[in-house]
Image (cartoon, rainbow, N blue to C red; front, side, top):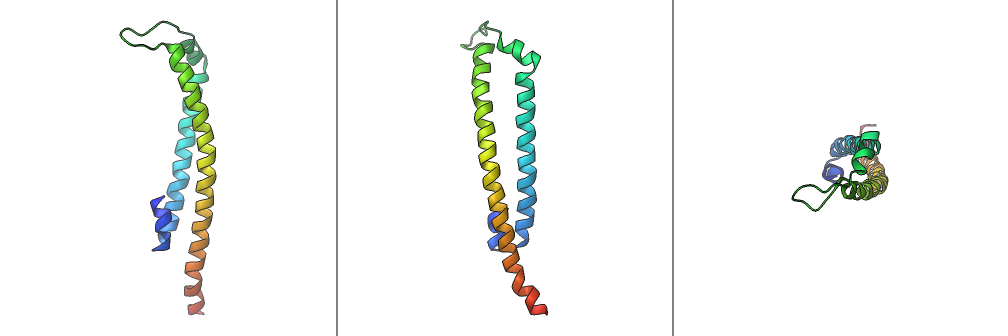
Length: 109
C-alpha cells in the first residue's frame, strides 16, 4: 500500500505496489481457502463435535469451532471489501502513472 501511495512521488513505485498488492490478495485468498478446507473437512467436523474440555483451560473443540466459523465468515467478508478497495486504488494509481508519463512522451515527439 505504501508503494501505491508513493506513486505520486515517483511513478515506477506504482507498478511495484500493484504487483505487491496482487500477490498479497492471492496469498490472503490462499490462506482463507486452506483454513476453510481444514475447518469444514471431515476431520474438522469431528473436531468440532468434540465437547470435552481441555485440561486446565476453559475451552473445548466445539467452542473453538464456533469461534472459528465466525472468524472465517468475517474474514471472507473483509476479503471481498479489501479486494475491491485495493482494485480501486490500483486503478487510480495506473491513471496517475498515465498522467505522469504523458508529458514526457509528448515532449519527445
